[in-house]
Image (cartoon, rainbow, N blue to C red; front, side, top):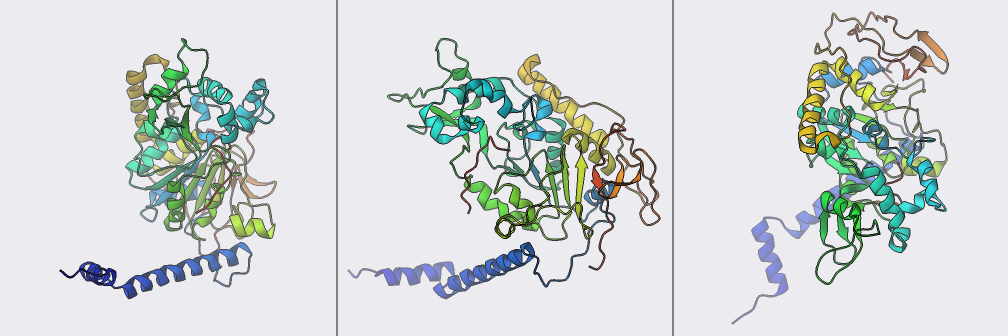
Length: 448
């Protein structure tokens, strides 16, 4: 009986699939050309030598109100969000760098050479005890999501959220019901773990029960599988480890978004921070944070090539970047009110917290909303606006005091009550739009 050769089998497979080897090569060549074009465009923009015509702004005005109006419109349907530790601080989880309250300051009592040492994979293998003492202290309570977490869920409910990237490992997005398909946990999660010897998986409750077991002296949980006593480690990215493949796979998707919202992150950890530069040049970007960072102040050629130039808040030709200074929760409340989702947003938070109360009881850490006046009225052509913060045209130049009414002949807007104290530093850079004009990272879940 005659046997088929490898070549004959290959021909049969091509017939069955309807594709020839030539078709496959053409497809690969097309992908290669697209990638080459993307890289050439990226490098030319990073170095400031692009010959492409200047982009036209998608915003009626480059302000917080302008961003809100854009999100409320049909033009904005694919929002990407990026978050860091700052969105979880109101839940009771400390961030990493705040003096006095940040995790790094509080790690001094463990007598580590460096605070980051507790989150190093090499140190964890040698001595996991400090890590689990920290874990017990930080994540021993059933924390509730913050209003900021619920805002992400609201964007998803409105079919406007394309993807959510987070540096956080607390898993609070999951508690709001945010779709796992939309969630990219760039630094992993504390909600699951696995044995370092047999790779057996453990959920959050089983790990927590082992960490809290008072019958044993050590805080370190060990595997309970037959003939295995390996150390259980959380599914987070520690210093010395690569980012999850899921992050790498979806990072380029940001090129297709039509709005980027960044909240509660200092944007110093790469490559996470660099994906802010993967949007198209005309895509609006909103940054809500206590401090204005990530502005791209470094002009070193290698830095520009690798990570881009950052935000354009204070540039004269800024057509898309808006900074909102304050807490992430306040920023989300203000944004929801301006869009016309205020009442729905507050009801969502209330219902979510009540559900978690029933699930966890009174032990759950509270992060309930401050129920102030909410507006569900969307933008209309006849609306007027009251600014939430002072308007700024350049460094140190305030053009309108906080709480004053600012009306423009070209684009009147909606009235929003001021929530910010009168002495708050100006936080929104206002500039008129210019109408003409996979990676391996030595990073950590701990470094936000």
